Image 1: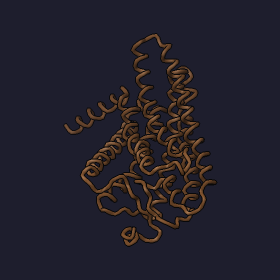
Image 2 (image 1 turned 45 degrees about the vertical axis):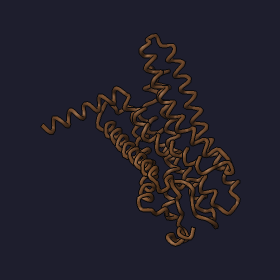
Image 3 (image 1 turned 90 degrees about the horizontal axis):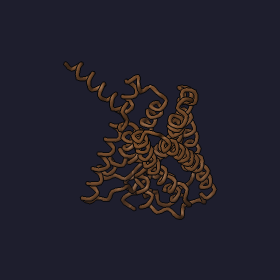
Image 4 (image 1 turned 30 degrees about the vertical axis):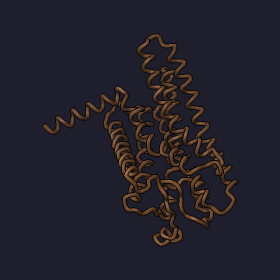
Amino acid sequence: MMGHKNQTSSSDFILLGLFSVSKTSLVFFSFIFIIFVMAVTENTLMILLIHRDSRLHTPMYFLLSHLSFMDILHISNIVPKMLTNFLSGSQTISFVGCGFQIFLSLILLGGECLLLAAMSYDRYVAICHPLRYPILVDDYVSVLMAGGAWLIGTLNSIVHTAYVLHFPFCGSRAIDHFFCEIPAMLKLSCVDTSCYERGVYVSGIIFLLIPFSMISASYVQILLTVLQMKSSEARKKSFSTCSFHMIVVIMYYGPFIFTYMRPKSYHTPGQDKFLAIFYTILTPSLNPVIYSFRNKDVLRAMKNIFKSSCLHKK
């Protein structure tokens, strides 16, 4: 630890990260870098397609554009710092940098939880009550849902970030994680955090358990409606779409719930880091593929943009 202290100021933290220096970690580093580039490219393309094609100016795609923007910010908040630390051999992150990571990741994690619930409501109304869809989910409602996700996520983040950074860190400042995450930070505090942890559980209920229950209920209703469809082709398509959506939702919420809804004493660094990979790195790269690029409207929009760009070149 003396080496760490020499290269850090008294307020800096040390991120122990995902990688150790070995050939295996270089392969893992390359894998994470490729996923990062893919996630940013896919989500940026998704936002551009929705913005440029008027046929995608619907509540569903409006919510998807916000999901893509959240995913770009989320993965960019964590992965570049992790990769630069690995390349430079430095493991430090400043107190302000750590605070910013917590603040932004909590906005995006909380906001995305609420946004995924809003998207499941959109799909529920579209499939189960198609005639009432224009009334129940109009432009105003979709703006309200997206704006609410950002606002509530931000308010929650302000409270938690202020609380966590307020705790004294008297011993080691080495965070056994690849980014500044609350459960890992609490382990470094030299005061009793049990009262604050109860607040984390309350936030977990609001942002994790309630939205996940709503999403599950929506998809159960959707599947029941799908099973009553007369067309076997429509049934197969709807069932396939719902299955993929639920897989991504479980991949996102499952590890997230397991990390934030357990007491501090049950956390192990290796387990927390492994689980965090799912909701910070993998789902941002999978969301555009599952929610958008398997969709005929999106594929048509992509073809139109490529055609128009080829015509401009000629």
